[in-house]
Structure formats: structure tokens, C-alpha cells
Image (cartoon, rainbow, N blue to C red; front, side):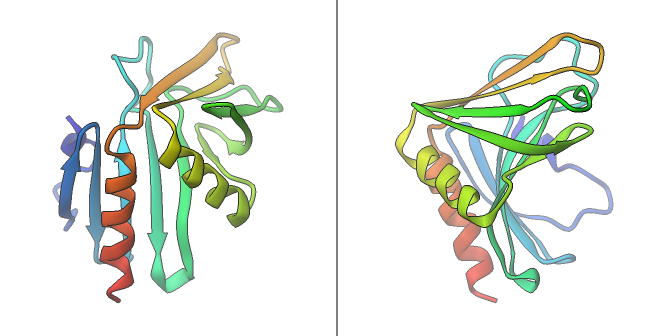
Length: 154
């Protein structure tokens, strides 16, 4: 299932491993490495396949950048909230993608992922409905480490 997230005829991805519900990949151009997972269950009414990813972009000096793809477009002007354990993070979002507002928040999210069993993403959909996706975090730390190490070799 996770391998299908990145399947593309033109893609030259290297699979770094599958770790429980998370996988890690490396792309040569543009150079990036990332851990990625799909939400639990099958999102009903999804416009596309949602995911959570933590990426490293060595040529941009970016490490452990969090990206959440919602299953539908979010309603403009409404927040995207990521809850991990007892920690809540307000994400910056546009359309169907959301990111941490800073590298410091990225680091706090990754630290929370390493300690928690699950995370939840909540947003208001453009059509007015509520979007809630839940992610199991078993294997997330290992996938993040695999992606980080793969790009650290550059």
C-alpha cells in the first residue's frame, strides 16, 4: 500500500525500507529522502490519497520537514491542527497541504512522533465537512531515521 503512494513511471525512487505502517524513500532529482505513511483506514470521500511525510532536502539545507496531505481541499481561513499525544500543533496550510510554520516546530513534531503511538490531523473541508485522519506511529521513528541517514551521506 505505501509503495503505491510513490508509484510513477518517471520516478526513480529508491525504497529504503518499510517499517510497520511507515516507509522510507530516496529520490535523486531533486535530491530528497523521506518517511511517509497513509492514514489508518480508508478515508471516505477522499479526492486523492492523503499522507504524512517527513522529508530531508540536503541541497536546500532542510532536514525533517513535516508535510501533511489532506484528503480534500481545506476551507480557506480555517486551521489545520495536528495532535500527537498531549501536544497540539497549528500547521500552515494551503489547498490540501499543510506544513509546520518553522524548523523549530518541525523538530518538536518529530520529537513528539518519536514518543507517541498515534497522531491525528483535523481540518475543515472546503465543502464544510470535518476532515479527521489518524496515523499510527509504529515504525515512524525508524523510517525517519532511514530517510535522514540516506540524505546525510550526500
